[in-house]
Length: 228
Image (tube, rainbow, N blue to C red; front, side, top):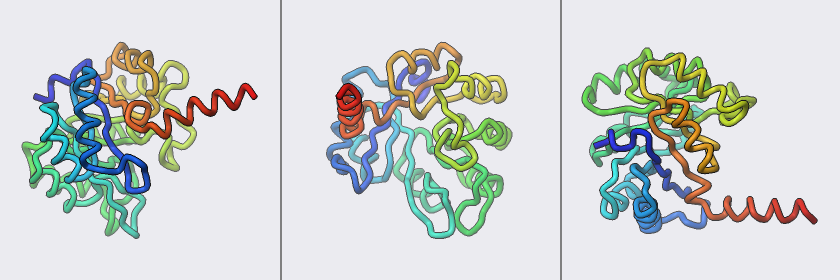
């Protein structure tokens, strides 16, 4: 079923606790709106949101659980506990942080993913990476999909930008890995989404510019205020 996202749009339907639309009911309807608009997949955070979204749409889901641990900067599906929950809920793909940073209890990505793959050999996994080097490691470890989700969001990638120079970092990643690449992060226009697919990405995830009205509004306000 996940193959239907190839060359198509995945919409990220997420709202954190401090955001106005934080509600599983709202995320379910956001996913329905995305489906009606032609999206072929959904990315969602938390078991409650995923459960509600599955009631509303028939689209494949990339599932994550964002969880904060005091001894690690990693927060996207950081431990086996979150993986277990997502497998039990039943999502098509589980995404997890695939940066070089240590997971909770100082566990390396290599050790963590080996344990995850051993426990769930049939489950599909997506690597949320921030650098070209990390995508190469994730490819070698055996992730099913390589994502650009964290480019620009880590100390190691803070000076990198997905869209600069006609997506130079995405083109480098595509030339460096064998597994399908899912473009995600700062893809905020239809033209950019189309371009990453033209370059060879398997699919493209778009979130905030579709599903976070406070950010969309701020873009309009910033443009207006710049004219003042």
